[in-house]
Length: 290
Picture 1 (cartoon, one colour):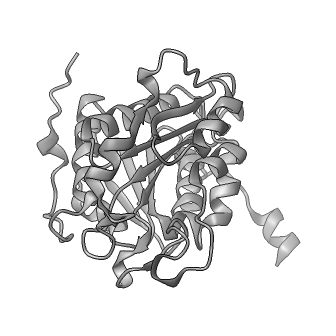
Picture 2: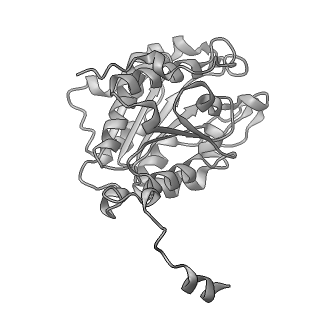
């Protein structure tokens, strides 16, 4: 049943990203998902960090919180605890999520708080002229490290929904993000989506091939494999390590046996951020600590 919400109701300012950037796809897909799921703009909060893609809250008509570098996850967690009645989406680049924010990427999922985190993964710090990010392949622009493994870390950290999609297949991205939101809104907890994209300015090629060509030849849709079971975490780990001729995309893992933090602790029924505190006497606390 349609509520009458259209994509245009989420329009705000015109983005200033480089023409061809994958961030446009993410922005447009989010608008489609929100409208198709009938989530009004005033019931959504998008929290971002610092980076090209982290400017997304400026370009969509929902509530936005633009945090400092690497901190979208803890801020999103705080918001969800205070207002569990709202739909909270955290979004950050590979530096935000796997560099300075790597500690939060471990600890926020293990709380199983009900937020969706979208990791914009293009292998570079595009905002600061293309230095290699934690997910860049070893040797790219002189990096000496093995690339960070987003899916493996999300699985090991306790995320109850783990998926991957890419900006060259918007319909697939729409499916994955919608499923992530459904998981969270059903009260099952933290959802992580690794979004493979490319930086058209600083990282347009993947091992010498154009980005679109490389992934179209190798995309392996897990949900089209009748033998794949996304409830099997061991199998999810195996798929997360698969690379080369096949690059798995889709929902790697989904656990609906657990409750989100906000459900487990009863925050849904009485959101802390909406509590009336006029009758609370803080004198005892002030006397104790001041």
